[in-house]
Amino acid sequence: MSRPAKPGASHAGNVFRFTLTGLIVFSLALFAGASLVGYKLAGGHRPDLTQDTFAVNPRDKTRSVHVGAWGELITRDIGLERPAEFLTDEVTTPQPETWTFNGLKPDAVKALLAKDGLTAAQVAAVFTPGIVREEKSGTVLVPSVDFLLSLDAETRGKLYLALAGTGVNLYLDYPYIFPGGSLESIYADPQLHPDDVAVLKRLVYANDGARQMSDYSALLEKIPTVARRVAMARALSRQSAVFAGLVIKSDTDIDKLAAYWGSVPNVRFTDIRPLMEALKALPEGGNLSLFYLLPKFARDRLYTFPLPPQPGEPVMDCHWTTFNFSNDTPDNRFNDPAYAVEYIRKTYYQIAAPSLYGDILLLMNDKNEVKHSAVYLADDLVFTKNGNNYRQPWMLMRIPDLLATYPAIPAMKPIYMRRKTD
Image (cartoon, rainbow, N blue to C red; front, side, top):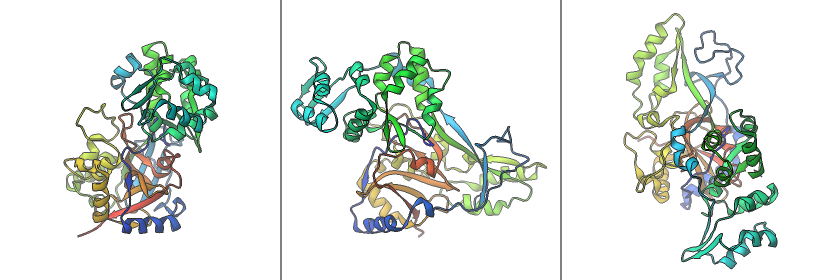
């Protein structure tokens, strides 16, 4: 929930509502005075590294180096795609798109759809006999692919944005999001069949500065072969992430690096120091991946996609990820919003902008709901899991790109927090 932010970005599964007086006070204070304009990168830009093992082509514009308390941080933009092995069920036998309106009778659903943008003729079309059924829990619609393709982008956008977050359909709640020019790269992907791209284009709708797609099931139904469905599913899953490391040279101050990177619990800097010293001793120096400087929880998950969840497993969303970042054993109580809110209140305090490894970023809307959380690493990088579904990997992202994955959140503001010291 592309990351910048990228195709497949989605929003947090657990929403934290800050009703505690103290949290509302600091939220409103930040709303009044903080913005991304106030976020300043520490250090300058050094584009010329003669011994850069990350960059094969010195003209590569995805490569950059920033210097600060963290040392010399070198970054590259990379793309992540779900493994084909994870796509077996959904691409082999695509299931029809299903909309479930819990607690609503058919007439109430008709009124809702009309209010949210459908014409009387369109409502009648979606209620064709055989595709709607009334159950004890509510009304279930199975709109046909032809009906879904008949919607224009404006109508689709109005309807889908109104239904988002209501539990009607997974992909309405967690759409594929394509900010910036990311969608064009999919349209131009030579591995995709032109007919499949044409269907995708008909299913895209606008949301603020980004474009979205929610009819994933219908898209797969329309693609005739498994191989072509795999290609499309992988292209849509593509995430723009960041690969990052530290430049270690003969004059690198390893003690300074230890002071910055060794401050987070369960980052065993003493074990990493020998490798740093070995790189420093080389005539040309070397680069050290940030992978080595993460706690075990993050190190085990970075750049991977989770498997589809099994019954009883925790919701591996952004909050579960953020607050387990430095834990050896994940604490599943962070799936409980009330517990997480109280944990934040007791453990963190508000800051104006992140500057220490382990600070956290919270994205809050105008209802004092936390829609996303991530862990600050260095420069403008965060460790994040965007949403609670298995289409989202654990990865490193730049803060501006992360913000671009949440265009549907009104009045969203970033709030930065730091762990209290004893």
